[in-house]
Length: 187
Image (cartoon, helix red, strand yellow):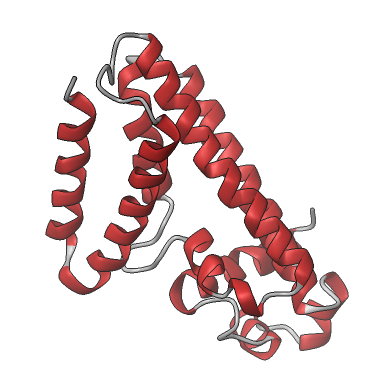
């Protein structure tokens, strides 16, 4: 991937986290990058093509985070929260998760992007479910039977917490985190 192409993708990610996919144009990107709209069209003919590239980038970062967590020498029972923590840390302060932002725009996205967003969403839940399964096999989460449901609860709560943090401040997200710790330590 060329340096310029990556710059376009990263700036697009920033815009998605701040205002959503539908709320910016190639003109906004061009002005911020100091290039022409044609320069962006050279790399991404349509905005949907750019969106698919962003989704691919999101998939890569999701898989990299998962791989890093799997290799970390921490207790298996701590890995689900470490995963969520690392994912939350990838979201800029007072922004929203880019996957959540794309989900909010889902009905208005091109079909190819909708499919990519669906795949990322499913994979994110599956990864956290796998980490919870590993924790359960190591003796944690004894009282939990529906680990996919727990993964869905944790992911949606974390992402909701990030949105509330924008309005209510960092202390609110800290409360969400404290509740996660207590929930996952209960057997």
